[in-house]
Image (cartoon, rainbow, N blue to C red; front, side):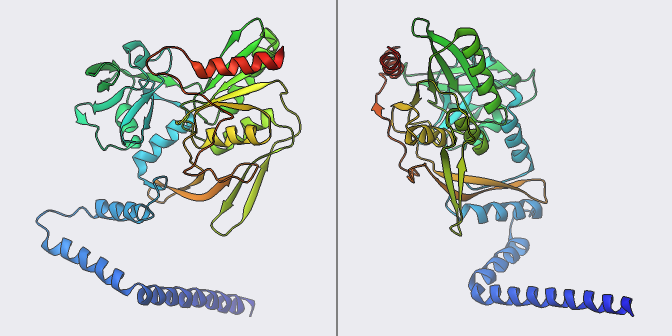
Amino acid sequence: MKNNKLIRGINYFFSFIGVVFVTCTIFLFFTNMTGIITLFSVIGLVETQSLYNIDTAAMIKGATAGIVDSLNDPYSKYLDKETWEEFKIRLEAKFGGIGVYVLRDDQGRLKIVSPIPGTPAYKAGLKHGDIIIRINGENATGMSQDEAVHLMRGDPGTQLQLGIYRESEGREYDFKIIREIINVPSVEDKIIDNGYRIGYIRLNQFHSRSAREMSDSLNKMLEQSKIEGLVLDLRDNGGGDFEAAVSIAGIFLDDKEIVSVVDAQGNKTVHRASPGKLDIPMVVLVNQNSASASEILAGALQDNKRAQLVGEKTYGKGLVQTIYSLYDGGALKLTTQKYFTPDGTDINEIGITPDYVVKNDPNTQKDMQLEKALQILRELLS
């Protein structure tokens, strides 16, 4: 008797699921009839009339990517299996490559940002601001940042051919660089003023180890050099892991709001720092390439009056992406939230204006932004 009831219950459940599925299918068909008929017409014509052989897997992959591209969101992407594996390597910050960061500028050009000291790129003589024009003989014009990074990475010991244009000299260069295993440190530190005991940390990116590296670097300078002031350099930092930004902000803020995020349904989540903080005067350097996670950190420190910002207005990426693993081994990177600074400011496509707007002259080696930061800290420590 109990078994019969169980079987009937299962039948009712699946019958209900079937009714819901059929109802939804009918609803979608009639509300999107023209689009669906067009889609199947295209598939039928391609399969029966195309001069070229059809690759069904490639067609499905293209359709999947097209659905995401229709959002007109530059940050939402379908990542196939190979691209997703590459993306995970980037998050783990250990890979075979030459040791450069790459960003697209406002003209759509791929530019090299700060070759990592000691890496093949640094030793070969690549410079900040070099424009990538060829990768292994392939024209890089119009190439996405992800495509370029994928081509530049490879097995250690293999050769990368890179063509660049150096605007400051008005000429092209060709480089042949042997790839190595690149362990990407997110933090570089040094003492830049022994008299006032001012430390300097350059944060290159936000990845899974960044908060630990930041904490270790600070502890070392506090214990060994007894620093009393800090310059935090976020210039040319294009962002990275959201949680890393929140964790690093928590090092400097005591039970304060760091950032709030709002999803499509209007649900709001507020991220706050835990009690306890490093309490020394600090100045943060930013520029037009400081984006995403960099802006979360800079905005939290500025709004909470914890640090003064020096440099140029930041990039203006106030959106958060969530990554969903997919059945085919790839992933969907989808914009799911918008974030706001502690004062409730939406900085998307606007950026953060520093407390002191200072521009560096590209024709000189003088770092006016860093000098202004040091001036501010020396006055605070006097």
